[in-house]
Length: 407
Image (tube, rainbow, N blue to C red; front, side):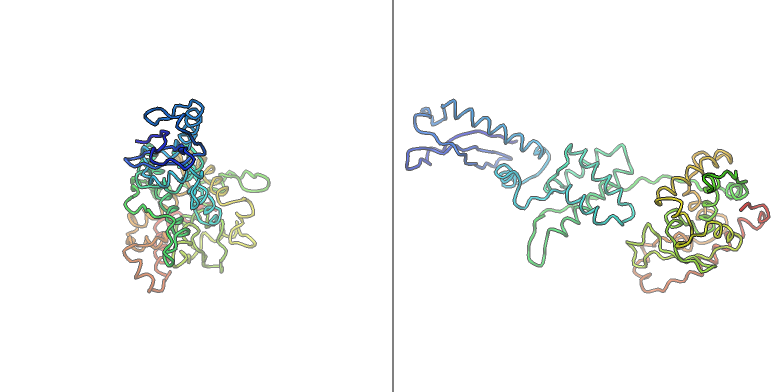
């Protein structure tokens, strides 16, 4: 419960026989006094030493109105903000060590624009602003209680509920690292979010495409429609889908960025995870002989594939592929066919149909086994095992239709 009222303190009479008018602020059973520039004499007080001068009363009420507006945005009903911090805001507008979490987070994102998924950080910040209904949020308001309220606010968006809350916690920790200095015992951000556990994203069962459906895509005729001298979305999507399936689920970002091809092996660092992996998420993939013509079809000058010449960004390439796959999906009877199905189906068929063990498929996907994370640091990676597994997969999938594949 918060409250303001004006008063003078009877025992604080000055030598000139006046009293300073104070604004008393009470919050959670604590109270503090804020001195004003107003003074009153005995004539301006009643017998109970209450201010009776209407001019002074009106000025006090105006000042209290201003103070109320200042704390409205602090949501004190739900925020556990120390009373002295509130007084600092009332006195000076902002504390001398005031930290705007939103401003810090946006600047951090600008300085880390190279991180894969940085757009998700920006989306999380924007969602937090909508939650607070303002563009500035003091760091003191980023509390466990408020993050839980934010989580509830996102409840109808399960993926965002998990992703955005964990992102805000990550940005809060970045702010702690930036503003606090343990070596010099400087702690501008004294609270933490260690008690908060972000909700796990709900598992949604995904269906990979059957071997028959994959083969149908490989045997699908091109539409041979040229757009400004370039292959259509339909044909681009078919080719990229085939490349991805045959190159261990290589995604559009890596098709766009990969640079190293020696005529037999493609070596690249997975764009999505290279910045957070000790091994830089390196992959060495042997290109199956039958798919080599497709690699040469899209050969680029400075990178393996020329997609970077045709599209302004990885996102544009991915968007074009998925639009083309929708066309293909209508032909083969797979609604809303998406590019990620190539990667997912490659892994599912490898395990369920070819009998490749999950540990090997985990490496084929270039994933980290958390239980072996420390061990992996000491083991030199050998890519021959995943390439031998891929040969088995290609044999199972295409040996019987090799003459029917359309490249």
